[in-house]
Image (cartoon, rainbow, N blue to C red; front, side, top):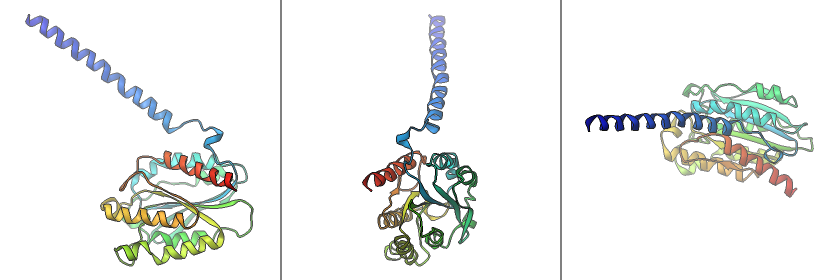
Length: 248
């Protein structure tokens, strides 16, 4: 009887081990397929755009894991699109690639984030304003600015009135309207306050929602403090751009 129980126990462990061993392979395969899906025409931006991509350099390090997805999006843009890539770093706008129709060159200019408080901006909207001034006034294609940021401006106080009515954000909204630029935003926390405080994250998301809403764009979030992947951001961003095109 003892030997029978030992045999049954050993058999159960062996079967469980086989099941568990098979799970990571299936999960990895599914994750790999989801991470690099084949894009259909419906998942691509349909009309050329002038797109400036601004990335806040002190965001959490796993934002750098989304660079490949960002490159993929740039390369999927229709012919004739122009792309600028810049980083908001240490209180300045660092342009890695000025506006160009060479999409592989623009995609190749993306780099890993510093992800340190040493790269924190005074606030992101000062550099947004500077980037808006790089859009040329002429041209028939839509002007789009994609801001990847925590959205928080606590430079003049950490209270709703100071943060949600940021002077620099209002200036950026005014300039965006003047130049006919729609601002879209992807939220990600910084290594500073927005990764530690849900209130700070809420303020930042509300600010991104405001600048997007008032310039004809849209802000995308996945949670109050962090994000999982940019995949749903880019999918919704693409649908939003194509929806505007259909209306026009």
